[in-house]
Image (cartoon, rainbow, N blue to C red):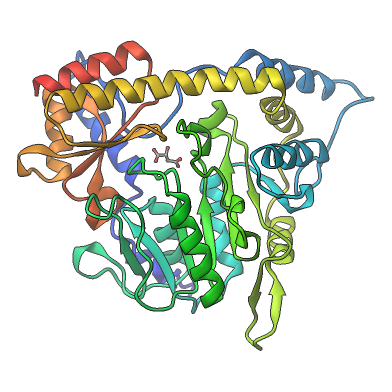
Length: 407
Ligand code: MLT
């Protein structure tokens, strides 16, 4: 008889955002006239900027001509995009070569899949709260025990990342092999200071650990001097993989394009204790399981890095970050304790009145018709917190802040 992968049965609930969608749909069905404002899942609303759409259309036209039609592309990505990404890194003071870049259809997929190339007996550390994909994919792969108290999985090392430590992930007490870090952070909106990233790179060097660095929101950093790429830190090329996405940065949630950097100097041990370059394993994985992102989408992505594309993308980011300011300052003035929203499009607020985060979610939905994300969905340290996304039209964001204040 066929057997399932029983690790899936350890998963405690459905994926967070579909669960939120289910509750919102049920509410909308019962309250068809309610004007629901959605600041839950971080999904962009502004259309793709002109330089990007125009590159996409031109590439689509190329596909209609026999002289310029393209079939399968290179699995790692077209050279024009690899070069553009590497040049962008160089402009940010990070040394990344074009052949260390892997183009993909999203950072969710990449951060989910990367664990496949590492052994199942690695000790994994995650922050708490955490983007649920890092945890769930390790549960699926059998790297964890069952869910225990507080909903935490056995064998995973949790790093409480709380208001008390400034949302800066503390080093683990013992030795871990792989750690997921996300900066600017989803969900707390905090950005890791340079000193903290240096500490983490030293930890990884000393413990022969690998840092999986999710920088999907780096383009939202507003404060000068903050770190955009872990490769700005000396030694990071030997210990870190970095994930970046055009989803939020350039409005690609609907058309899908991201990139992951696996430096050639990053090595880890095989089961014989020999050092092996991780780059070749990821290349092997991608060439077996992935046929690449379509040519028109990669041309659109290339346009993101052109001078006109950069300007247009920056205008959209500035729009969302003004939303973030409106939410942060509006709620702070109303007496809420708020975090984030300065270098990230997420505002992390303390739930008032001792409610749980899911109670607050239901209350806001019912009484204000505003959708946010309950902090508990990101881990036990997220209980008592609530995430609001700055991805919305200005008038909806302003209206949501007004309604939340009334509640
Ligand atoms: C979020 O709201 O956390 C993100 O949109 C989820 C994602 O990027 O997968």
